[in-house]
View 1 (cartoon, rainbow, N blue to C red):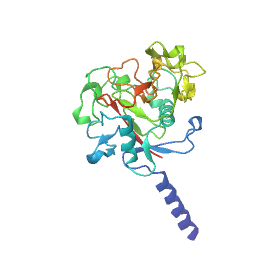
View 2: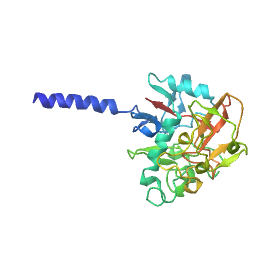
View 3: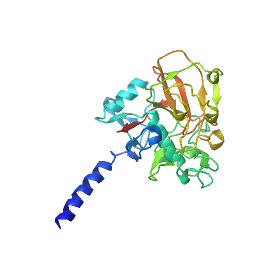
View 4: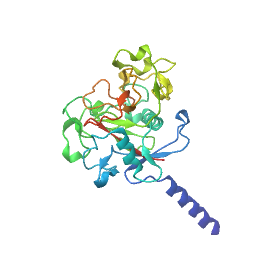
Length: 273
């Protein structure tokens, strides 16, 4: 009996340790990106409470018009272990989505395409996440598969708007180098990124899926905005936006974005480590 009680006690502690805060989802470790333990991520893009506190819930419109530093600070206000999602965590989530058959049009991993959320500019605005307040392809159901706004993680929990609807700030340290691949100021296919990468912290492994680096816009995972800038005050954004039909996707990335810009097409998401 004593052994059963001790086992139950430690099992309960383990269960508590694995739980995520309300509105957050568990994401498993991924050694390919240096993620050696699980973490929790917001199910929804952040919504704003009074005094600038972010919350993950279905009601309300995402927190937009926020600078990079403001998004990072808002996440850290939640307490110890909280932060803005970083690029390694983003890619870990993307790989969980890629590895779940429910996210593929063919019901077979790697065959067909993955849904990319609200990205067809119909309606020509970002949508909230309250089902009662949205119409057509801004809804979770009753629409074309490619415009579906939720994806299944490894746990089969659903994460909202990880692709399309609004760009999201991503925490990452990098140094862009001047490279011919970046001199055309246009969208480029992810599978065409040169093997040597595009700078420190912008090696190819940090821009594409470790699970399947050959995925591209035919699979609707997104694209890279190729633009070289010599400025240093830049930050990474991912996911695309409601009007980025071809380029939106779970791997869509732009690392030429000014940290000081705040606009209505950009939001953020917090994690708990």
